[in-house]
Length: 230
Image 1: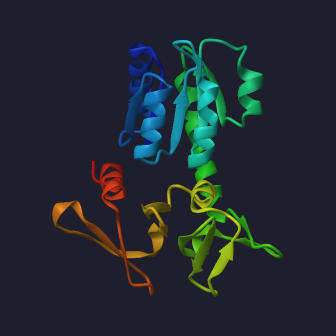
Image 2: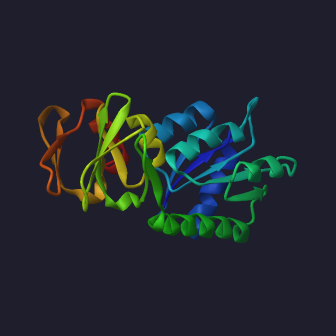
């Protein structure tokens, strides 16, 4: 499990890391001391969950919720104060932990994150053109390509579909654990990738099932390596 811990107090981050180590021997933890560092981490890689404090040196942890939702990452609040609870649950956080965090409560929060991940396998998103709307499972998508302000979706089991969403909008609604931006105009489903060739000068080329090759931009290749090979 890959977790992001956002707290401006080093000792608080260290304590959460210690507790995670007791519960999840193989976990990976990334620390962020403020919202800027947290947002940068979310752009670099995909996390299974975010644990965020509410008071971050003048900022509020709830300000991170839009970024977390855009990346499809569940959020758990970890704070010394009860007064943020209503706003936090209104923002659809997974759980609300009071410091000092009890390991039994932390276990419950991790369990909720795991259940949310499993339920995501049955997720359905809505795609539409100017006259029709189709509910589809993300797993049936092979890739998404930009077509101006629209996007063309290629499926594994049906004809391509041009939808009224930009590539950026599609990136926000697709589950971030399975879909990655390969370049400025293409998003690919990792589950449909047969092999990725790592070539010279940082170049990367992916072979998709039944759809030839997709070349990663230099920026996205760097992001991919940081996310999967760090």
